[in-house]
Image (cartoon, rainbow, N blue to C red):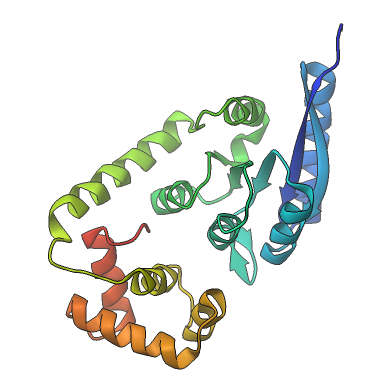
Length: 226
């Protein structure tokens, strides 16, 4: 082969060492069989490690699992979105439920691949995302756009009259992600008492009396992305 391959820096984020080893093997195969060069610049097993390595290495592409106990890949996407980072994130997940696909894409992912389809789809997914296009295989695209139309349709008409402050929307967003008051306080650098005050205001504006009711109503109204 003539010429040098274009090297694409990649960060692997998955809490299972055996799975990361399998991805390394697959990427090495792509290196020897295609014109694209893939350079693994780091591996992470948690959200914190992923954020730290991204800030240090600035990989062009992050291959991200959605199961990163005690948090998850949605949290990782939101945290990465706070960084001065211009790379892209491709989700590799065993979760095939519609809402996981929708949440990941709305949180900033450029593509979504089911883990049981990696052997046939990963190379195409990487090539597509690197070329600034969204990658969704047919079975994933159908699920995503079904929910997209549902939520955007509701948000166009139902949220009128409900005015949340920017901070209240941030608190509500973390509430929908399943965060506790303490976790919300940590993410937003405010006190737990302030979180409780915001929640009280949110409950009043939404005319609800519990966290669960607030989450359901916020999603139905399109106030936040699921």
